[in-house]
Length: 215
Image (tube, rainbow, N blue to C red; front, side, top):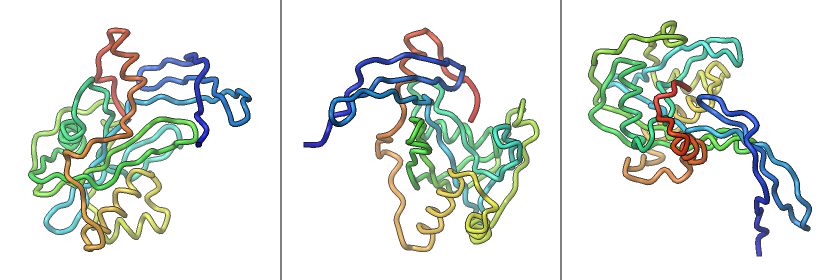
């Protein structure tokens, strides 16, 4: 039988607005216990928004962790308690790109850093695009720019190391596979099995709602 990694103790080391750091005491094979630190996250969504000319809506955003502006997909945190992933994706596409979409499918689900974080991201494919009013941006988003990149060029940029955001890279390559006929996208009704729960549950217990801003 497979070993069960039971947790014998847990403590919160850092409790910040959009993430937390938790230390678990875990039983290892052979009975020894070891500490494992986990970054808790709300989870997120991202969108490959594809127009009729085969172009992807991408945003260039400053990321302080790497002190660089990165070319990314429109995306956002699942920080509103109980909000369905698709509704979050529609909101983020409007807020970051000023777009709405008629047709939605699931491209790929990602666990971004399973060695130390529970963050998971659902990436959607959105088609049948139309322009809508974009709300006024603030903080890093006030510096964000929208670019239209052909799917072929976006794929080239991923493989050339020019698009390095892992969510964008995965979504673009998945979209290329679907649009090329090698794979099929999934329906939006399919459950997001790896959507993180620990941080959202603790925020709810603390009486703190969502809309904590921003990935």
